[in-house]
Length: 543
Image (cartoon, rainbow, N blue to C red; front, side):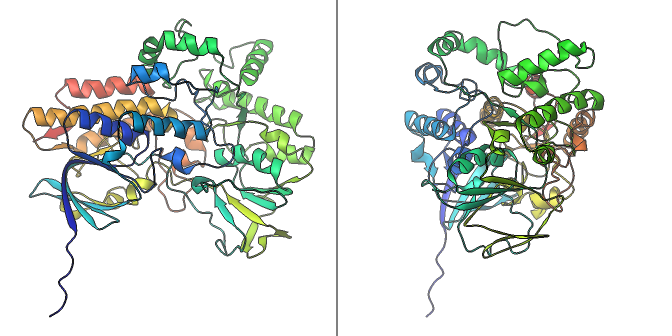
């Protein structure tokens, strides 16, 4: 007799949550408090999401740390002490771990476990989910809290993978310290992770070669330790700040006492005053230079003024005129690619051990065992750093074999670009919930505010079904069509579509060119979501 095939272990749950980052942890906290049997699954060995994986040198948040934190636990907010204006990765990960311990979250999280597939059973009205450990899960709801920037995108270079020395991905950095002392290091990519890591690597390595395909705009972070007085002042008015942040455009406030004001037009301000304002924002650091005017994001002429200001700053910092020009972005309006915050990035190119290779003039032919073969030379390397970004916003969703009604996969449903209702739901996929999905503010906002809003909306909807003895919530094709049209129309009023950015999906070959986030702002978006609920979940069918 042959051996009987081993049947997968079956576990029945109310909710399966995919991802143990800040969204997944808050989902677990809320659902467990509401009495739902919930399990979270994550490929990592601990909580933290993007801050678990992105450990590269110089990794730091571009939202002020006092704002980039949970608001649901007022006692935590009072007890936790952030040390810097913009928190570094180790501090953010320590915070995530503290929250997990504080609320005993790990007991309901399965680490080092991937969700490989999820199929909706239309008869049983449940999701059948399969894990990488061979476990079969049956759940009424599946919530995807997989993050917007979590699927690394490899470079499209011949011979990639043949390099004999160590290759380090910024998106999957080793947990142990990497020592570049005495090494010749090559860095491919000058997006946010490249711009943050290059100064740190160059300060340690014998020589650093930066391979740049597209120059990026970067503003100084002006990071610094937080003072006791400013921390105490924030904590004293914490609830007031949080309430205002939730209804703001970006999800955080510079000054809660500033009266509501219309942003000035950069074109309407007299030149001397304009220059003074730009200088002030450059000196203050952060992203205010692109967000502090009403027309920089929507008017080509206004945008060009801000862009040229930054280019002049680059020219004033970088001593070699040709290197300075190579670092000056000219292929896209400022702000239409993710603006970067740096600490000494442009100054790094004044170091004698740093070289910039402009791949527009001297492209990479291939990578081989010894280094990088350019059009006109071979660059020998001891280590390679890959900072080529992510398949943003959709990559981590379609990488799971998700199948809704009639066996249609999410990848098939999104073949011409993602289509959601509010970034929360997909037609044909009942009881499948997205956290900060496409066509929601997500990456254009303080992610913590957007995460909390989505988690609260989703968990309230699940509780609403239970309270009314219903099993399913499913958005309609008409609702999706209307929301996608609205989101696209708002995006078309801006300059975002002019850039070949990951906001547009343009960094991934073959990916549909679609503006992925929602540009209407956190406050307006929250009102739309609340109105949907007030109108008995308008745009959804509850059954």
